[in-house]
Image 1 (cartoon, one colour):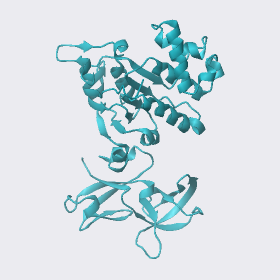
Image 2: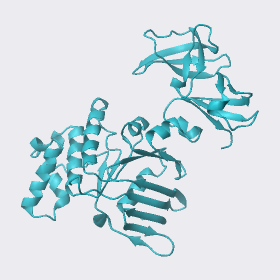
Image 3: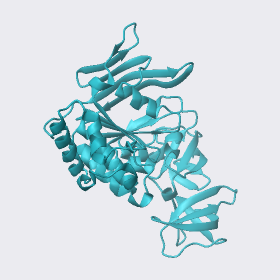
Length: 361
């Protein structure tokens, strides 16, 4: 597909779906411009794969609309159903398992999705896409002769060979060797982006979503959208404590507005910066990421904690410590030498990696 053949926006409008009496998706809305990647994240069972199947036309929801630009792919509920078949929608799919046929060659696998074409054209198209994904030299190989990354490259060639208008990816990199995963992922997504079509990817890896997505949609366990926005917005501007906790280890504590500060068990936060509109005495939930807690020196005020242990990470030392009240905390220590078990240090909170939410919201 040429860049000039840009696809229109994929739209999901008020989609609701249930299996029996169990609601899976409720009032889900999503817009994916051409050439962009939207990552669906959330707990297992939140409806991420179900939403992919609805977009592909493999499953009919109970209510809502799916459109590609002005083309109606599906309209459900309200007494009338319009449902365009998966074949008509021309959606490309990549799964965690590439599902290559073991008894035919790589070239045969790529040709499988375009069997309607004349033989010569079919083989020319397949060889072109194998070259594009760096697998041209493996066209005569069989699935058992390929690595995991090569499997996914062949699966991508097979999907793009059919000239899809939307690409859906269901954890396509989850089974790859961690040492190669990032490079293979970035290569494959760059190729898909070059086709300039809307892309939707399910991932259970929040860091992966932050690294590759143009937009993230966080689904709740009840099938509603928790928060949608850019990776920066999702990470730095979470709408509530649940979203703040989604990206790994955090410290959760209570807080209370008093005067010009929010008082917490790890020190004071300026009310004007984190809770300007809250009344005196308001009770809060305070979430601190590890980078939102830092050691202080030279008489700076803070809370004295005792180190339990520390381990080396790519961001420095991750320290596990305990406060005088018995609360366990984790924070980054960026010095060259680690803190040892039993060491006492003074820590304080550091914006913007601390988030304040009014209880009950």
